[in-house]
Each structure stands twice: as C-alpha cells, then as structure tokens.
Image (cartoon, rainbow, N blue to C red; front, side):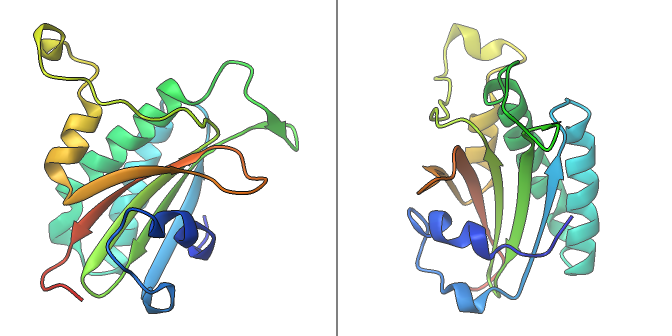
Length: 166
C-alpha cells in the first residue's frame, strides 16, 4: 500500500472535469493479487482510507463501485498467462484520490481492452454482467483510459462528488 497517486493523475485527467493535480488533498493506493479474494481486500482498504479521510458516509456507494471495478479487472483483464514481474503475477492496482469536492476511485489493470457495459435486455436479469451499470448508477461519472507510453494496460475510474463543486 502506498500513498502516491500522482502517477495516476495524467491518464485520469482525460475525460474528467478539470482537476488540478496540485490540489489533490489525499491519495492512497494498493496492489491487489490476481485472485477474487482481492475484492474483499479492496473493500477493506477502501473502508480504512475513507475512515482516515472522514468520509464514512460515502463508504457504501464507493465500496460497491470499487468491488465492481476490481471484479471486472480480475475477471476480464488478467489472462491466465499474465506477465510476471519479480516472480509475481501482474496485479490490479486500486487508487483512491480525494480533492476538496471530489473522490476518484481508479483501478489499473494490464489489459488495453475497453470495458463494455452490457445493455439492458433478457441477459440483464443474469447475476453477472451488470457491473458497469452499477458503477454508472452509483457514481457521478466514470470512464477509462489506456495507459500512455511504455506502460501497458488501462485505468477505469469512477468519480464521486463530495458536496459543493471545487
């Protein structure tokens, strides 16, 4: 776990309302292992971070979105033959960044494939496939961005407004 969200800000700025990276008041991140049990760890990390930032009242919505983003990354972005670094499988990484009036949850994964929301219809009653619909419903906005340069993968983010706009 770390607290450096600055490497995430550049790709996040595309598609988000104007946010000055210098105004980030807090950020935290953690690497998650390529196992579905990591979703529970992501929720625990989110609770701890939001508690530190005195944002207890936002936990339910933020944790649901974090759970969906991490689940999608684990399910769709980590192939069985995922590249290894230092003997460990490439992990999904969760970043939480707070500004005065905004909170961004971002999940980085090694795939460049775009996330696809399932449209409503017969299949929509299925238990799986509704993750991005839930992200869209519980956050103020969301999007994704491929990582630039030599970095492989993408970032899928969700923005939550925290009271009055900055």
